[in-house]
Length: 401
Image (cartoon, rainbow, N blue to C red; front, side):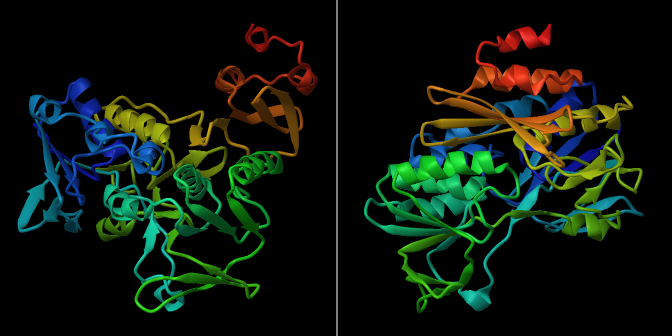
């Protein structure tokens, strides 16, 4: 029976391995992960776990008993040093593993601040792994000053936790507004107001010149000459797909590990899913960075490794928790030319993205009903008159009939 090796023990890797078993694969499954911790979920790291509201064990994706009962071999805290796609072998530690099929679920890695501008000083952190957050958590003491470089979701989530714990928080965003890469101005405005109401200082349209300090960071100089005191710094400047092992294997790279619609790479025996994988989408290629994509794509790839022949056509969705606001997003807003606003009604408001008369996506803040209706409309391939969305008398659920 065939041996399937999965490199990457995150959300996608575990979902893929579990689906292989539930879909009937009876051969060996080996999952290899660089981190020593049991496979865990990442989203709570910058939210409940950082806040101290979630124990480490609650992060774990599956119990040890699950892997044992499913006969899934975990090799944790181990680094793959070589892939020979001709011999179909993976070198991990002192061992060489033969595979029949290989799945690359290597995820993504955080961009870091260059050492030349102080990125290697003590007290400078990223928020990506359990080890990152464990190292950073002792810094979160009321009254201390944190400068967060980057006004994307991870940076803003960390800012929210820091503010709730009583720290002095400044977010520095080089673009003209926070969330500029991923959201409309209306959503940026909503979260700017939310953060400033909780005492977070947000500086937009200004970048980091360099971090200051000898050995340990004590400040940040901005591109406009301002200097901000800092007891520690968080870099939330994005992530990049982890493609180094795919390159070792000789598979094609295009905005991540290039796959076909089924999740197969340019090597017929190597598959990929999750943050690291790009797939065909509306005449181009798309790579998604979200938990739900990691799970959905990995499960479909597992089925396809067993011969299902299904194409991956997702309706992307995402969420972010900041203070008392839950943002839920469905769809992709790329190419939108207008925004329709519904609300606010209390603290609930939603922004609907259109291209012409076609609904593309929705951002819903504290409005799960709008989110669910918008997501369902997108899944059905239906659009709806923006006037109906704006009208507070419209019963959203009726739009699905």
